[in-house]
Structure formats: structure tokens, C-alpha cells
Length: 142
Ligand code: ZN
Image 1 (tube, rainbow, N blue to C red):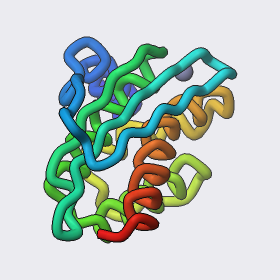
Image 2: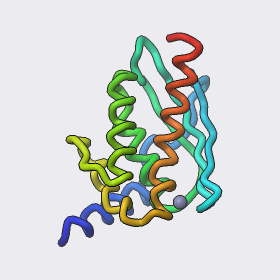
Image 3: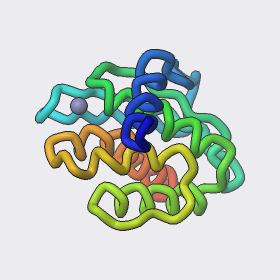
Image 4: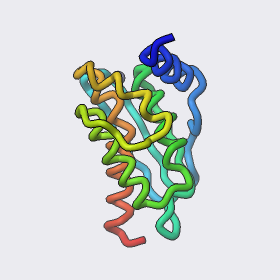
């Protein structure tokens, strides 16, 4: 099995069995975003306390790439500090624009998506929601 096949399989696995789907009541911040190019929609709920992302859930519908990206993003940032989450956002965005990522674990599965410009927005959507949520949370003070 090639690395591309392995990554594709990881993405399909998360699409079929997504992690952290649901909603928080109440979240610290909730962000709704959509990608009109593809029809992907996401609602991201974050619980942020003491500079940490203590819980992450998401809902919405979309293509396999956007759904798998939301699943893996939520798993990757849950329990991380806000600063670590911001670093991950930057690494992931860089990778989607062709940069070699640092060690970002399973998220490297999306590296191949960078070759398909139409799909890049799908993969980035949950990360954009995360970025927006953290900056809104930051503005109101931690
Ligand atoms: Zn999509």
C-alpha cells in the first residue's frame, strides 16, 4: 500500500466514524462556517478555560474531506493549550499551501489534498472555524 493510499484510508475512516460530533451546552464559543464552493457546513463548539481548549465538538454536513478534517482537527486540539492550537492551525494551513509540515501526527494524511486546489478549502474549513473561535474568545478576554 502506498503512503497516498494509507492517507486516503485514514481520511475515509474518519469520514465513516467521525470523532467528537455533537454540541456543547453551553460552549465558550460557537462558530458556523460554510464553504459555498462545495456545500460544506460546519458548526464548531469550543470550551476554552485557563488558556486551554478543554473540549471540542462539531456538527454539520459536507464532503468526506471536510468531515474527516473536522474529526481529526477536533481530536488533535482537544486538551491542547490555545497557543499549541494556534501553532497547529499555522502548520496545517502551511501544509495545505505546499509547505513541509512539522510533526503534526495523523494530520499529515491531508498532505495529498494540497494537490487538489478545489479540495483545499474543504480541508481548511474546520481549521478556519477553530481560528475564528479562538480569536473571538481571545477578544472577550480569557
Ligand atoms: Zn468539501
